[in-house]
Image 1 (cartoon, helix red, strand yellow):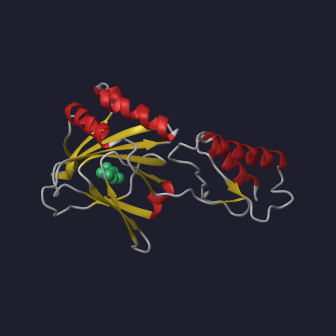
Image 2 (cartoon, protein in one colour; image 1 turned 120 degrees about the horizontal axis):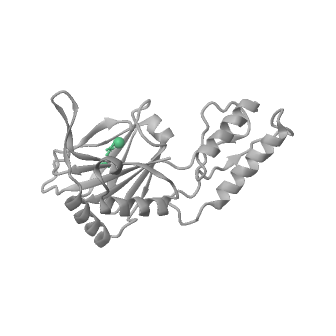
Image 3 (cartoon, protein in one colour; image 1 turned 30 degrees about the vertical axis):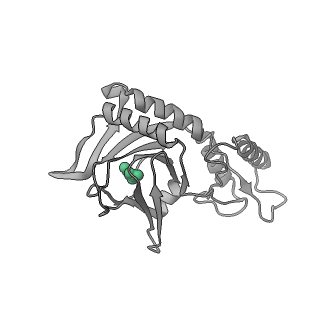
Length: 241
Ligand SMILES: O=C(O)CCC(=O)C(=O)O
Ligand SMILES: [Fe+2]
């Protein structure tokens, strides 16, 4: 293993102090590189970080596939994407839905001249537009549950089955958590290379998680639905570092 890879790894840990990394050494060499002290410090740091994670965290063990990592130690990914069902129970989720619906000024968002996103949206920028109590409450809850720092919040309101989100990748955050409230909708993750599609039913109170590697490898979407009487769904996307 080259010292520059170790330095990149070290920087990764510094930037993501809550990352909780497990490094698996297959055929650990006697010495990883020229800078043995740095090797040892990094591996010890990785192990202590992985042990620090709470067993109740929805992100129990992230084992990261480090991009550009050439040899040992190798790293493997934590399971992602992943659905955490019912982080809020049905009653709590309904109360949160009502508060968010009341407080958040959802609007049509123009993404190109005369072209609008096919749902109502809101980008939360408290520094510009003031704080919204329900979103601040959720930010704290999500940070408590995930042990991560929420760096951005984006809200969607699907008023009916014609409202949808086309296939895309997200552009913010290394770790994306989406809270679903209200109507159950289908969430698709399509592998950009193989076309294989993972399908999830997102119910009120569910939290869906994917990391930057899943975001790289998959396109995600909420398709239209032609079911009868499709009610409103709100999703709140928490971009975390
Ligand atoms: O509504 C959802 O669950 C997903 C929305 C989404 O992917 C987005 O706003 O970027
Ligand atoms: Fe997205």
